[in-house]
Length: 196
Image (cartoon, rainbow, N blue to C red):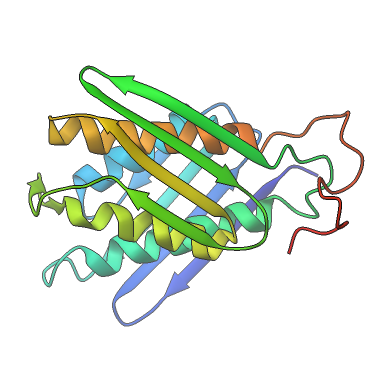
């Protein structure tokens, strides 16, 4: 049985369905009412080698907060569910990636203990119709619902689009590493015998 999951969340503010295959090839079928957010989530699939289908609607006439946060929640839940018992899991992943002048480091531990650190200073601005201040909202929601420890840090950068995009790509690469299975790992990768 593959490492797949399908999670649905429906509230008075949003309706989101996410399907993941952690052993995919990076296929993305992403539909949200926020085109820049859709573009960023596509980066997660492509660079994380995760097959990802997203169908999201939300009250974007108010703003993009609910849709962005809830998508982070549902994606995190789907990844956590797809990991199953975590036997043989690499668990840790990190990536330092450039995009022109921008350089970001991402590190993740699928530890079962949620924690989030954001050191990517962003101005209050928009990329398309999406407020860039929602980037940490998305990642914090993912960390909390996937029960992972996630750190994101900007090392260099001036162009807002480059900074946000390379943050998503670095996250994707770190997630790709952490979600891999290594045949040399026996059971759960923890001296405690549990990831919780």
